[in-house]
Image (cartoon, rainbow, N blue to C red; front, top):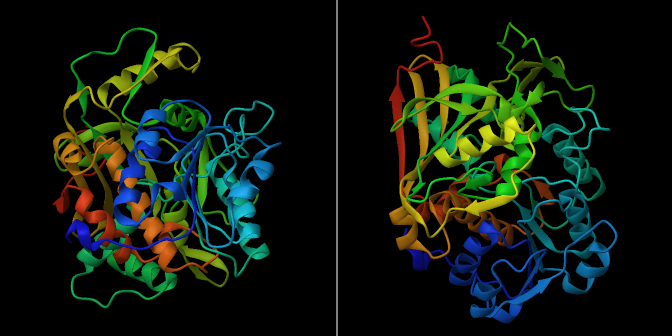
Length: 447
């Protein structure tokens, strides 16, 4: 699709909370495709990072960190019915912002479900209560309170977010000439009928800078605090009905829908094997992400009130090599974050982000479907992005467009919205979208 055909007019006010790598990367896309005038946009952030860019583009830029005590007072004058709150912050409660938007009649989208400060790491809270599972349950509980409210799209970045749409595309391609499922149960029946038992969100980031990581420095291609924070949460995975061997340090939650389990160790300290077409086999981190829970939950089939089919789903992430070294160093300091931080953007010399979903267990072996986006193409397409951030920001754009076109859907997850429309919007920014078959399994070469 030509870029000039992805166009939706929005006449309301847009409030962006947070202006790190994702906020800075999505702003030019919003201006390009939503017909926004700069005076419609207000950015609220905790630091001066990105001020010059925002002001060059004409947006109002305010350094005003949101807290439990001030968020209602600060946001209420900025949000009327029909306005949009785009939350790309960390340590601002997503559930609190969603509820405020429901009360104000404003639309909402975020890229992950965030807690207030300490929600990831507070030692007084059990691992279960620090999990993405718990945060998701709290956010979804608001549906009962606001069943006909304005649209609030939860967790719609690259992953979580875009990968839920990749799963549907992969299922359709595996199935061949079939009618597109019309509802949740039909998607579950399709996955079950195809024999899909396991889904990896398999990602390999090969972007590299000519300036190597220094001791005492954390280097990454996207939010350093966000990545480090989620890495300290318990490793989590959607737990399939076919599984017969429970992990020795695994545990189930005693509340909620039961689609996922957690391990009593941090995701940044948990390694898993996976595969992407260009990298081949790799060892990644089992970082907790909402999609591991939501995809497993969405595809679950029930019989007599009990789950009869559910795939195992988890994230397998190999970040850029300097980020791996950064995590290794942090682990040696009992997971304390380094004082020096460097976000790789303009200094990236080469590489790509290969992000997709790997469906396994079916008779055809393994099937990976996803995006291959190089740093060179990302720079050609839109400013203020690298390959990793553009996969996120293009998905944010797709989710915002869908929300504007469907403004009264209350609180929804990526799995519940139109994957075709979102991909139609995001596709021009995703590089090569490919599907590749393989005979790889995690047991290959293990002796």
